[in-house]
Image (tube, rainbow, N blue to C red; front, side):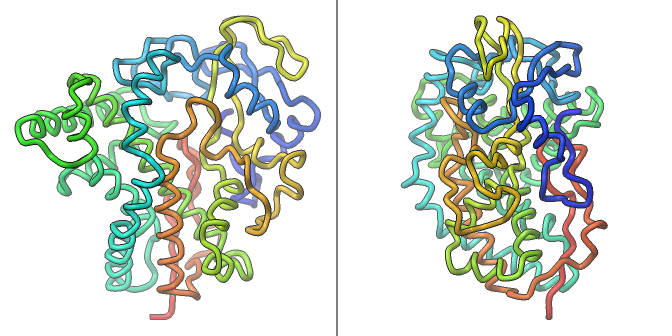
Length: 390
């Protein structure tokens, strides 16, 4: 069942099944939760091919979801206005162009000082609480949650509610009714936020989009929802899992502090918390010697691609000194993650700050007692109890 659980007893590694498929059948038949017969692609080369080929569509009304219960609105419906992730050019291009200027490398790096401040505030709160403490609740979730909320101008009082609802939407076990309720609540809060900003213009990302005058309230609400979801859960889990990796590897903390940027890129490749994405063939396409027929959905496995020995020698080893260029943690092609530079800033600030505060930070429970997020669309940990010398 997609997403695939980690390797038994090895929480950082995808299952052996993905490696076996990549070696012997990198384009494999796959039955989707709704009964659709499509494909799973597992090699780095072929994943890049699918994600960059315009003959494969990301339209929401064409792509069958590989994740059980992932859709709130029902299967194969057109994306709502503003939901550019479920669109192809030219609609996707228009929305993406409006947002690209808000997420430039330069602008994201300008946020470094604020991210440093947010990190220190949560470290102070964690220190006041004392050991043991849950790294997820005290640190890895609130940092990206606060930063993306501040970028959009979400009031502090509403941020916890956003976080809870977004987590409900990411569950693979929540009922459709619970997911719809979470989605409706988020949209209602965002709608009120947009109305307030129209009346009292604000100097933030959402205020800038309103001032541009090219988007109506429905489009703005949908885009804000996508940015909140995309800027929260993936980074939160990569920070938590990354800290766990570094605590588990001799010399890992020292390598991080010596070269945060390089270590973060290897963590992104090594962990790959996003299990994959899917595309629909707009015509018959040959992929890896297999004929993908028009209308069939192809799911690409990001963890399998990022552990492909044909691209990354000894891929199951965590090695911050390796060349990580070409990893697919943020996807590839025109739908490559818009907020990847923000995620990099949050990780290259947040992880070193954590270990500068407590160089000997360590898990407070055995590895097998850490609750893994095998019931969520984004992999990670529900909690990570840690301890340190007070």
